[in-house]
Amino acid sequence: MNVNDRTPDLANAAPATGIVWAYRFDADGNATALGHEHVDAALAAPAPGWIWFHLALADKRCRSWIAHYAPLSEMAREVLAGPDKHLRLDILGHEIIGVMPDLHQGLTKESDDLVRLRFVMTGRMLITARQQPVHSVESNRRAIEHGRRFPTPVSFLDATIDQFADAIGRMAERLGNELDHVEENVMQDEPADEQRRIGKVRLQAVRVHRQLAQLKTMFARLEPRLAAHDRDVAEAIGALAQKLDAIDHEVGSLYERARLLLDEASAKVSALTNKRLFTLSILTACLLPPTLVTGFFGMNTRDLPFQNTDGGSWLALLVAFSAGGVTFWALRRLRAL
Image (cartoon, rainbow, N blue to C red; front, side, top):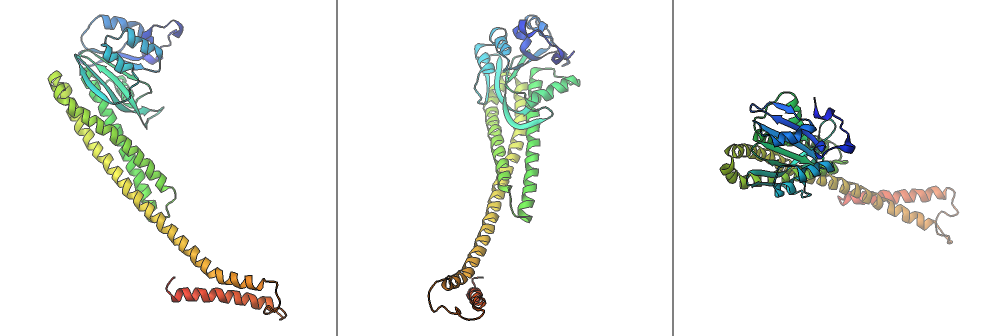
């Protein structure tokens, strides 16, 4: 039975009721869902394999369970339930603790919003916690339901980070497609909102690049210590670091491409603006002499030309148009057009 299908009495619920998912994995990596009523017994009675708990920090019962029941050190509890959003990866005795980036999991698929996934891993237990639903953990849970095996906590954590890397790769592909579409519009049509669209791509790319750069730095710094602590973990982290490096290179290329495309779009907008200002200036120059003529004939003074002449208004209009035509001819003569 799926853990999500249970509807406990929340009024009298124990802290373990706030756990989102709990699974026991045997030595071969096969998973069995644990009911909330079996969590304490599973922690008290060691058995072959390992246990995974996933917590929702928005639920106060989860924070209570972390504070009073989770078999962790005080530092691990602070990292798991704390407000710090800085990325972190460290070894505390037999515990490996971390705060990692992930993508927010929407109703049907992941979004582009970056959130935080916290975890504490020991030899026989992995506890993950999040404030908002995360894509990588949800993907692993679905994989478990379809029979995927995770023989060790390291394999599960490796798959979680690998899911994040794959999601970032898909995001980079979407951003690249967006830039392709914008580039075609910039080359063919007059730029409309392309600058805004390029700006969104640049913002997303730089956000992802920061996360990947921090992850790579943490992996490089901690890999020697992990090798002394757990060689399997160190090898998994090294492989993930290489994959993240390739994705970060792709994201960096997108950022540079977006920057160059923004410069090109800005130059095209400036050229169009200058062209329109030039046209407006020519129209102003051509209309200024006729305006002067009409202003002259509009004076209420004696001895105005054509005042007593039949068709004088038409003659005055002809003088006005002639003045504009002479101005236009002069500008062409001076190669201003």
